[in-house]
Image 1 (cartoon, rainbow, N blue to C red):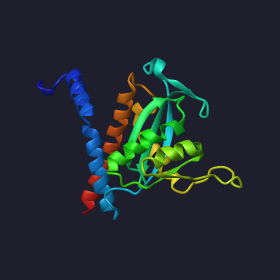
Image 2: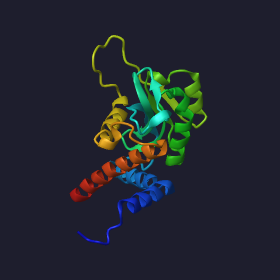
Image 3: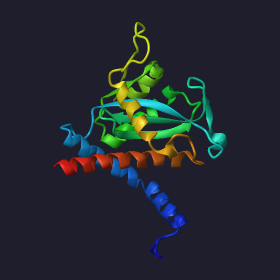
Length: 212
């Protein structure tokens, strides 16, 4: 084994510098544009899907964990937006007790920043109903469209558009580090999700390159 490999602490410190510099966000943005163009879409989307996911807390996440009464979990909540192909656009982490509707404005601003204000429509579930989230999104030039589950249906139903973000959450859970909140800092948890999506998108780009 080579003796010139840096110790783990040096690798971690370098990774932290890349995280702090936003290198992985830039990589994800570039990969998203490449994959969209390769699929015959515009480089920047006009429609997105917004949702949240609660990760159960661990001793490492400590006192910043909150309780999500709807999901009956104590932990951290990941608020995320993806394009209609499931590619990451924006995300941030809060305590699980944070209301989804209160985070729409912050997420909408991040979406427009990541796409040069190309997004006009966001699909959301019934947890985002009300004038407050609609107004927060509208202030960023985005209209919210609530995709509702028909009361006449029972059991599992594949909702139009909404299933895309659920698939993206499922992609993230393939990374064992992201199954629960194992991080001391919320910023690290968010950055690890960005890195995970960058890896997924690199794999898809490699598959496209092999078929070219």
